[in-house]
Image 1: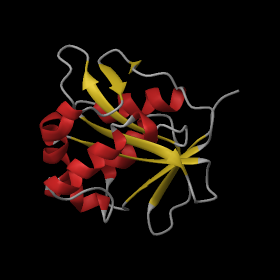
Image 2 (image 1 turned 60 degrees about the horizontal axis):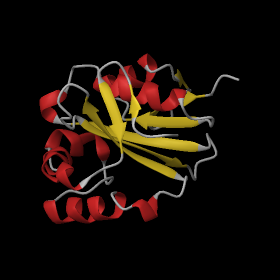
Image 3 (image 1 turned 180 degrees about the vertical axis):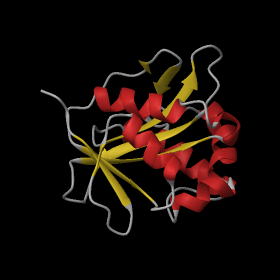
Length: 161
């Protein structure tokens, strides 16, 4: 996938140094932690280490994408979308996302996910807590099909050929 990837309102790009403060606010928000379980950094030092790793061109090996959706009007980071090779046999890749508290309920997660899925030629799955209706709505709105639930709600994207 060639970056930046643009949509009507967003540009999806690799993380950069100036994203630090927005990412700290995002990853340390208790509403993000509530549904992310043990995934993602939880304090400023961990966010710093994550950013140092993922803003380096040497980590771009085609097995994952760490995307920062930004508003096209002013380049403000609105969240994070991470996609990469999956260990789960459900699909080739899996993903996770989080939207900055100040930018929720604007459809940015759906817009970013739908754009990324359109440009990937692999199957992609995602999951959310059984009670996380907002994330389920994002995945359904991005065109993913819901699978039978297990201990979580799971969704699958199969590329069109």
